[in-house]
Amino acid sequence: METLEQLRDRLLARFPGAEVSVVTNPGPAAQHSLLLGPAHARAIALFLRDDPALKLDQCSNVTGVDWPDKQITDTVRTPVLDAAGATVRILEEKTTRLRPGYLEIVYHLYSIALRHGPVILRLRTTNRTDQVTAPSLTPVWRACEFQEREVFDLFGVVFDGHPDLRRILMWPEFKDHPMRKDYVEPDDYEWEPTPHGTVLEKAKGHYPPPAAGPAAKTEELKN
Amino acid sequence: MQSSLKSNFSPSALQPFSPSIAGSHVRAVHDEFHGDLLEVSMGPHHPSTHGVFRMIVTLDGETIVKLKPVFGYLHRNHEKIGENTTYLASMPYTDRLDYLCSMTNNWAYALAVEKLAGQPVPERAEYVRVILAEITRLLNHTCLAGFLMQDCGCSGTPLMYAFREREYILDLFEALSGSRMMCNYQRFGGCRVDPSSDWLAGAKKLTDRYGAFLDEFEALLTGNEIIMARTQGVGRLSPELAVSAGVTGPMLRATGVNHDLRKVDAYGVYSRFDFRVPLGDHGDVYDRYMIRVLEMRESIRILQQALAGLPAGPIIDPGAKLRGFRPKPGEAYGRIEGPKGEIGFYLISDGTPNPLRYRVRAPSFVNLTVLEDMCLGHTVADAVIILGSVDIVLGEVDR
Image (cartoon, rainbow over all chains, first blue to last red; front, side, top):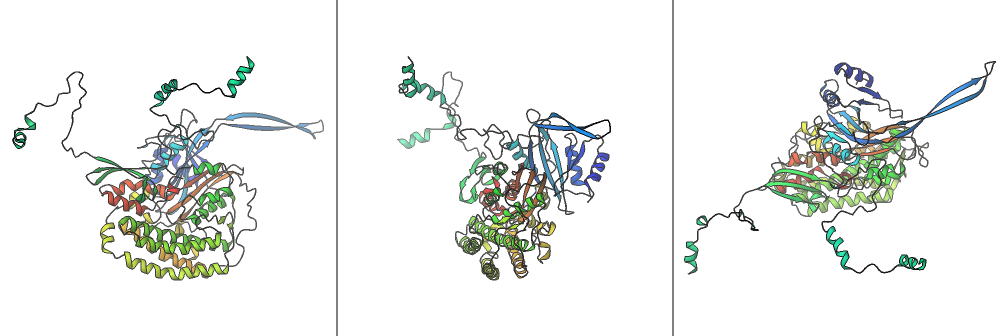
């Protein structure tokens, strides 16, 4: 199979104006990936599936990754020289910048017909709060159907063009997205509003007020 | 008197009910039969759903016209727990995914972490892993065949035969790892303990007598007329849909697609063994049963070769680091051919002791994508055996 850089160049030639870049993986696995812009993602996916040299007919794994906002510190080191040109000391200048967070969707593609892979695709949302839409690849590979629903459920990515985008593992009334890094568990998972809440509220008026506990006693002492 | 009253009464002669009378609280009663669609909730607490799985089935008469699976009753956010703990501490937790096949879950996770960290594995450990994975395949396929027959209505007998064999295998697992089902046996860079010569003799004995059990089991079931009538042509799956939907494992091979990761990826030392990949023709429930039986026969062949060729040496790489294990930043996706299909782990490391992302690609979860496509047009009783032939374990589906 061609290298990822060759594939990127071929995609850029085939889809002018598309955003395609290679994301390198520094680890020993060296499974590098292609980062796609949302505009051409589905067309490129379709091309990867149908291209006779690639035939990536199996989408094995779909998952999300949450990248929260991150403070990045850049250090610039400037050597201070004396008249003879020797280094006296090194000035360190630190600047911090904020890398805005985003949600990432990762697709692992393989070819059953030609037995190669994986080609890894990545899509990114604009941010983590209000612009969390990404194009759905379910029309290209049916395998994405449940897995994209899971990413929607657990990460909160809204897939544009998904046929049945509902929660899949959490229950429908659940509000948050538990796989996000900043998710805080509720105190009581089991609580849910009951239709008799107002009745119970009214019923409180018919019971005697709560007995004078330690708090009431301290009030008396103060007076 | 009464009979004359009855004969005088004619409903069509009465005025039709008018709901327009002000202040009327009477509702019109429709007593005629409409033949509407019926929505039935199968599960979550039903023995045929193999756990807490639910299907919302829409029926026209007894024919299924729509089927929507409902997941999540066993969801405990395995992935979040994996991200909040160290790499090694997730190893026992992978046992709980597919609790029939803890050895292959361990291996898939160990393989992904070894890819992430560039960790080599000694040859003896690779052989032991193959032996355990193939014994796990025997265990899983035997149980599945028993459960499938139970779903077909062969009440008890095949399942008890299967569970008798399962006990022998679980005894082996217990002797090696100390636990029957939650083995927690693999480590990054090898295995936890070295199998003794007694244990290897036990595994050899099991391998030698398993063929006789399969003969007995098949004599009971494979040519059985009722089972053929019940399963042939039911739940057909086309190879194109199976590939597009990411179906893997025996379900994919039953449709005739030659895709077995033991051959394709040749991970571990699988390239050294001589075995064949059984393929089906029709992709129906009967083919899925047959593929599993044939795979068991091939597993016996692999086991014989692996037990005969087991080399001496260390069981775990001497450089393997268990405490303070921090892989370099990077990511890796490792997959193996589990008994249910492709089980994969996707890990992202940021150089800390915990993974930044820990993802489980569960085969039976993805295989359920096509459940509706297979069940449409069949009856409710067929949906039960189609679900049985998918081979799901809810610990893995819901994670």
